[in-house]
Length: 232
Image (cartoon, rainbow, N blue to C red; front, side, top):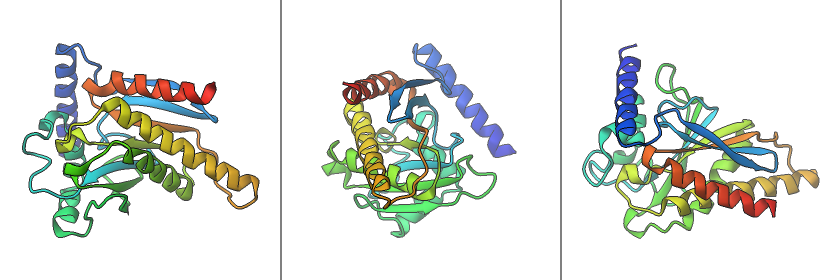
């Protein structure tokens, strides 16, 4: 109960900051469009507070205090830090011990204990060496999230790239667009296999991409542009 109260205070503070900067408040969301029957949603929310059957979160290879020291985002705006704290530091423990290295495309599926985060499942996906980051890898990251969602049989899931939380500058529009491209490509592959009677996946109805207040608008615009390419 105390933890929930603290997160409520944190999100309230974040919302107040967003309002003073003329940015969208926590909880703001928009259905950007639809591809192959899948609604694509952009939302301002920490992955620690998002209710979803599957939360995808991305991590670079571990560097000491990379979630708390600059250039990481401040604590009030750092979704990955919130996620780690809500899970009692297990993410940092996994990374620091080498149990989850964060190597590119590495995955680890976690079942969050009751009372920690609302997500039913959490998929950690590695991004590799932060100093060699290239936004093109986010297409593969997007496909990994989609394939795990289909494997688990969920009808919706949420993706958080978390790059800036870990202090890595990136092109917000390119990252968001590539994640969606990879996800749709992976979904269409499974549809193809289902037509050949080689897959029995459940249809997906929605994918949500999380963004911080400052990155919500550019992410939404990028998603809209990608969606338009599938409708032409």
